[in-house]
Amino acid sequence: MRLLMAAVLLLAPTLAQAWPWSMDMANQISIKPQESADTQNPGMRPFPKRSVPIPGTTSLVKDREVAEKQSNPVPADEKSIALGGKLFQIYCTPCHGYSGKGDGLVGAKLALTPYNLTADQTKARSDGFIWGYMTFGGAVMPSYANDLSDTERWNVINYVRKVLQNEHSATAVTPQAK
Image (cartoon, rainbow, N blue to C red; front, side):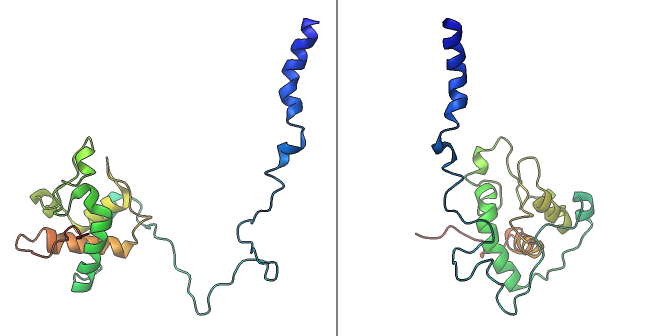
């Protein structure tokens, strides 16, 4: 009798899967990828007229060594520096701080201190080195290849070079007043 009871208890979970409620999620109303919820217009919405697809933001440069040899193709004009400042504030200030000295709020909690972007050793690095570091990441720094396009990364470098590394600059980004 005990053997029969043990067999029933072992098979009970298997039998429970056969109940009707075990398929509830599979039989629900759902919309599949690229499928329209509108029954009158099934299928994926067409692209807007005159739209042009753009390639992804992943770099075609294979590693940091190749990146270091690149020169900055984006001129450091006011537009580039302004955009670079906005992007720096969004992506870089948490670790590097508003001044670029590695004193950001997140950077203070890391085991390794983020680079001081205003230090002489950073100033001596090529633009391609910094671009490669932003693209591939480092010991603590994540890769920004999927977050920033190639051109946006060059704009951030223009901002770092012309504003943060310029000792007489008064146009560095500052925290927004709330």
